[in-house]
Length: 203
Image 1 (spheres, rainbow, N blue to C red):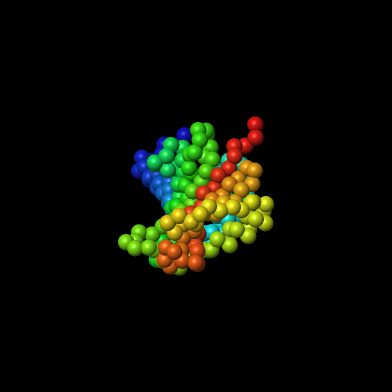
Image 2 (image 1 turned 90 degrees about the vertical axis):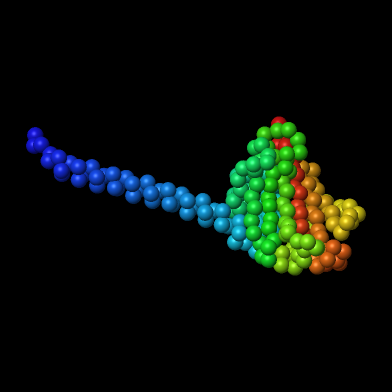
């Protein structure tokens, strides 16, 4: 059997190392690009698009299993991750126009493996009352769709400019909080928070 020249062998090994390095680098780059692209979706939506996705997810909720991180990501396309402030919880954040931001996070109201509530919140750092015009989506966006799906509406008295509307079925409850569009006490109202709760699955 012919003996391989040591220089030739070294060259072949070097080529193989380069090939493996290129493959590994490409895989790592693809992974980073995929993760970055997934996270970027949170900052790419208008307020209307965001609320459309949130509403579609809410209408699909049947019990607490539908409040899972995986299901919400699937239904909304948003990127969620572990919540550092809550054991086994999740949280996703994103940017909206003119300094507004939003968050979507699990809320642990009772012991158990799954979250039984999810909170959606929009906010903006401001010294005075923040004008919601750039991100305003009215109550009707949710009210008509939820009532059509069989939810029973009710409301609580306004408190410090915040109105509370409730929509319930036997297993799912949605609390919609609205603020004044341009000032605290404004006849025109915009959705600022949503609190979605669901009963544990049967059995």
